[in-house]
Length: 529
Image (cartoon, rainbow, N blue to C red):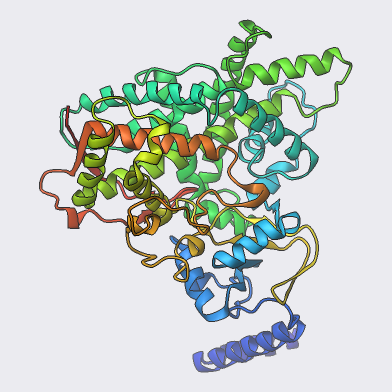
């Protein structure tokens, strides 16, 4: 009791100055211990605070901006702490390419975020259909929704990726048959934009409708009408999930799961995932009833046929099960819809902001194409237009920090020791804005992709789809979509700011999520035909 009284008396006598001094001494001691324990061969970086890491130094809405500044001070390979989590950041074209391409076997693993690791605990167990099955289904499906082709590793990931890529190619990805599907979707999009009659509209919904329908065609074998309530709900959930994962509360949960376990956005992720599951199960059921093994309509049909063949061969333990079908489908929708739609929205915004460049694109289209439908084969005859599309992708880089990787073993990389299991961020924005690779890295400058004669030139540092074994699965589909949608829209419409808004007032500020899109805005699509 006397000891307790003495302790309370001592605490009451402590002044704020004393407390500040004590905390300062503790921090200095912590810093000394931190650096003495650290390996001098490991990448350098800013001193982290206990528990907080370097969070107080980061722009939490756009952390990649801060990471770019860190790279100027600490070099192209440096360490930063996201809360208690140690992360190695790779910056600049040469460093990122060296890691993802030359050492892809080490840097090719995916590092799942905390919410995904937590949901993984219940995945794969058999569940009884009782009253409590709903909550367990939510946890199971959330894992399927978020992991899969984007987030898993190992043999299952390799087999599922190989199957998906092979069948997407069979269904025309990057080929003439796919071009026809995109062209048809372009016509539907044109009609939708004409309905606005030149009045201001938010570009997000119609553009996302078109991009989502292309995934529907590849996955289900058919498209939806834009006014279909089921389809509109599907597109809404895709956008909502993107925003949820970019929310501050869910990022806080990923860093401090014990403190932020009950945040509303985490629960909402489960709700959205459950709604997606319900819709997909219904679609799969219909496709299964109408399945013709001789004529597969889309990726789901191919999956079901392959699953049936394995079962008939006596192979029951394979990754071709209902859960992985859901996983594959939802991954493709999220990866293939948001990135393409967001890039197109940026492209239209840039055209409205830079009307002279827009008119150059239209004039090239008028001379080369005239009134006929643009084809992929026309790309070579449209160097300026192609350069504008590439420059849009380069400047806006919709996934600026890339998705997190992790090392599969210890490696000495560019003179630094990076241990096995370390989270690694290949900072794609540092590649696409590398001042040693681009003449005007932070400006919209289509000449980056043109030679002195005005011909299109490829640039090695153009990496919007990442590189190595984790390069975007549907890159060829995305490239074809961007080209055909962009050229067709610019052929039919002139995009301008809403009345009362000048070009200078159109801001290029990003809005965070899994993909980084423009702030909400409205444009006018004035018909040229």
